[in-house]
Image (cartoon, rainbow over all chains, first blue to last red; front, side):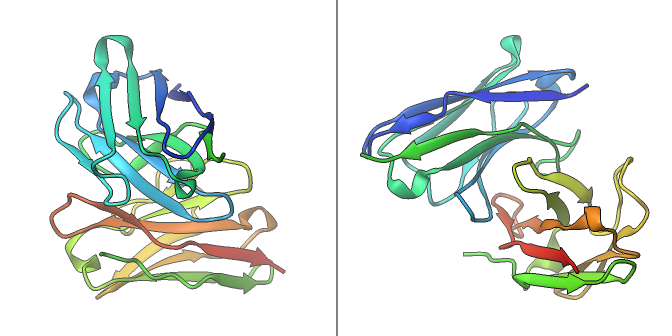
Length: 120
Length: 108
């Protein structure tokens, strides 16, 4: 079955950086668009970024644009998010999500998320 | 920036019908999707492309679209349907994804 497992979350100081990973299994990873979506504590869902099957196109939400990169390693079935210049409002659970085959943003599978806390 | 507007909360008694709306001017240009999220869990897709239901989602969940509003309808609400529901779409170019603010469904 489809499985997405995020890792790399934790406590980060303001201005710091982090690298999140998402390990995928149970499907042909290289056939699917992937996204990062986050949820601040007690708040709603916020799309962060998506990346095409082969590594492009790549798009970011305005809230993280310019201080984030997203990449994937199809040989290792892995998705990555690197964020820098972290702020308190980046504190959230970060989910990786798979878009349904042939779509960009119909999210049919989600990981359980990894919590990122930005605090001094 | 593009925003999807949902009511913050909806309350219904068991067995009644719950309707959750989502509105935005650009909704006619892109499909809408609905997700259910229970506390401490990841979201689950319950409606895609405005009206389609994924396999495994109960038939009581349905979606509709009219103009700039899409609606998630849950017929014969059950206690287990109590959750947050989010609509999602994209801007007209399909470049940027957007979620509504979420609606908390309370089963009285």
